Length: 115
Image 1 (cartoon, rainbow, N blue to C red):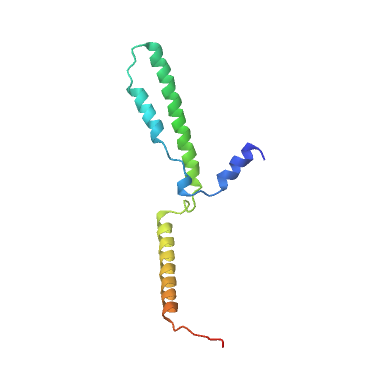
Image 2: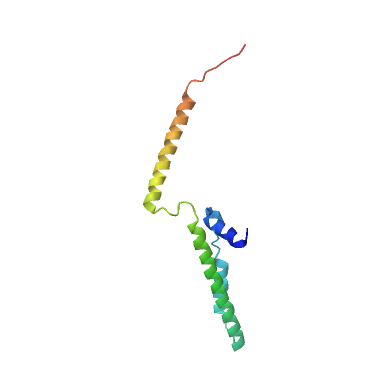
């Protein structure tokens, strides 16, 4: 299996929220820090400008990766109304199952003794 097959396979496998990479702040901080610097030397300004451009491209790539990962989250295809309806259905199921468990707990237990 080559690398492209592996990445295509990963594009279809579902992710959890914890697996989505949304750690953008370090890159944003580096971009802001590089923009705030005041260089007196023109060559340093050009070099820093190029570094800043590379960091912006890196941030753009991280955004693209995060977008593709978010699309793989389960349930993302549902709108808010569908999610609320599903939540209501699951809440009702949970309530009914709890009531059923409570009913079974309160039933008389049958004792059997083998002598």
